[in-house]
Length: 494
Image (cartoon, rainbow, N blue to C red; front, side):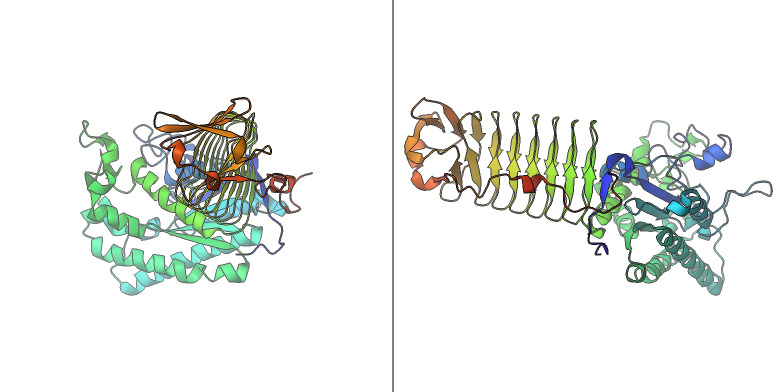
């Protein structure tokens, strides 16, 4: 969707948050805290999670370089999509999804929800723990669950949220507790109807509310796992690892089981779900963003817009994904990955790894001993100062060589396709090309200064047509405009 202000939001790393809502599949300790450490009993459950380790939203947040903790996670085990909780007692009510949304909107108050954050909702299973035999009652329950989730999304949007992820559930009929009651077929139908209801009710909100609703479908991946467990590393997808609070088989590996208990996945299963979430989030958010790192090691991930990522100091991971992205590593030993589009990657100071991947990219290593890999497309590779390793990949690539910048190794020069660009007013007639084993060494004839090693290339096969002298007319020059932040939204602090 298009940003109505036509100004790009900037997201400092300390403000890059995920706000999570839902039930035990997303709870990371809220019910545990509310019950004084009673539910779920930990161990065998992992630190208040209804699994043996991290749940999917945690893995999602980590993979996107976003912050998630108990201050931003409102999910409570047992929550329905409404205001009930299967763990409620006459003395205490833990509340449902809509109560979590109310608590969040109350906390943000007049300041509103952060429009640059990611909002995550996964709920619905607890609405159908007691399945009515009356089809009309089941249909009414499905409609109510869909209505509740729509209300949750609308409330978040009205508070200022822009990017909202809603999970379409995996097959509730495949839960061990469902199989025990012979409910595979009816609950499969319920899950499909519920997920279709989410699709029909929530997709129109993108247009009417001006938001991104990212629907992420777990039904398909869950069925793939059920039908071919070994392909995903599972040996058991029908029985729980736990029998009560102890393993059914103490010698078994929990993460070869899909289910931790009768209703909850293992952390291994959660990690697979998180991969689906991640891809859907990246594909589903198309606005341009700016993300700024910290002096520490950061993970900065763009989505499908033309993103601008700045690592600053620290050993950072910058990932552009779709779009024409600009990635600036800064100090530290950074990894920059462009993926698709016409990307600009600048390593900065440190021993960096630059990966252009798809598209016609420009890669600048900067200072340090860098590794540059262009990938697919016609790429430009400039290692900068230091002895660098350059790999163009497929496509007609250009490799920059300049006196005083170290001795670069070009590992895949393709005769007739790639060209070497000579900087510093060098021309072909000033070079000396010598054979050293299977490789060609390029030197400056005047002072015998080595410029590069071309692996697997015969010196006799190289000619003037393989080189390009630019002089003062250099279309590959890195300019100040390349490194300037785009126009950003007024929410950025001065």
